[in-house]
Length: 508
Image 1 (spheres, rainbow, N blue to C red):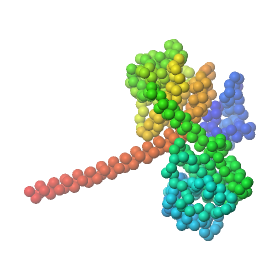
Image 2 (image 1 turned 45 degrees about the vertical axis):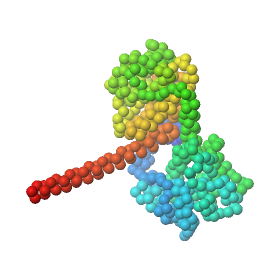
Image 3 (image 1 turned 180 degrees about the vertical axis):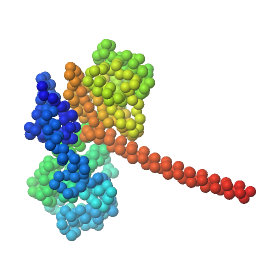
Image 4 (image 1 turned 60 degrees about the horizontal axis):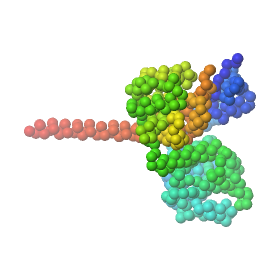
């Protein structure tokens, strides 16, 4: 039998995205083999290794900051909301793209900016904000005004600041994509801005949300960009008018990711409301030693006592890390639990491969949660068999552990990967909904194996975790710098007091 790679192994070898890897498979460059009675395929090692060897020169050039056949270097960039001081740099980019001496009315743009500072997102060189590489302007306007512009009854430059909405009110908004400009050498920057804009609006939900985005193509390139995002044409208005109705399922990847983020927040909101209405709502908390017996009973109700970790073993784990288990309780009964257990990588590999079982985990295999230390965690979730409304307990566990992960990120606890196994339809669905990727099961294993790479995954949960972790790191760095500055000031003050004391003694 030919040597095979799993999907993740092959993509890691090729340093390729999921879409690129799929294209190579579809083109026949990599052969796919699906074992009997399995849905998940594997990939011929010889094909993957050969392609990786062919791509090696290209990969080296990318790592060195160069692309074959291109002179432009890859810049480190940042995305931020436009400030009034950025307008000269934006007009400079307009001049470079459109080759016109004057593009727009800078006084008009200043009035828009003063009315609503969250209209234009721009991408610029990290070390030089004056080097703007792309920008995107989305203006919140009453739909009646937007339609008037699309029909040609008035110009975009006729929009006055009083007509532009702020984001103070709650509810739905309609946006006009007034401008989308990118430097010819850096077309990828527009994707970065679009992703950040959609992320901003996902954060606003449910208080504020977009219903529709309207756009008008001013150039052939703009027309192509609009159609790539699957805007619908409005031929009744004009040949270059389009609308994207975000109340309907999107097709383009950035829009689909955005809508998944919204759905994720809807589910969370629904979970909160359901439990607020229930006066006897279950409580979610970190498991204490006295809860270990309740967790034992949850597992035993599902898989029997022969396949349940003994209470004493779990108590020994708590001595190494008392925060690995979280529980839902209803009237002092443990009705469900979720585990996030940081472990040594070798132990996790053995566990998900079925070489060891839960009761074989030693306290020495478990690691503590420590800020700044990268950790890999084994996860598991279960609701007690036979309880009433098991879905509600499952939702409570899920919302609780997501909040726990957010708190870890805010504390600077770095979790790089989550691993899980499941043999139930609910477990499989939950893993997929959270963005876990299915791995090839170990030989002889009856469990599906899953991994969520929190450093790379584009799932809303993973993206939010990374953002919170980045903010935590920045806050800690600022605090450390402030602490050092304060320490230096105290040292200077102490030195001054010593000199004054010496002077007083000399006078006496």
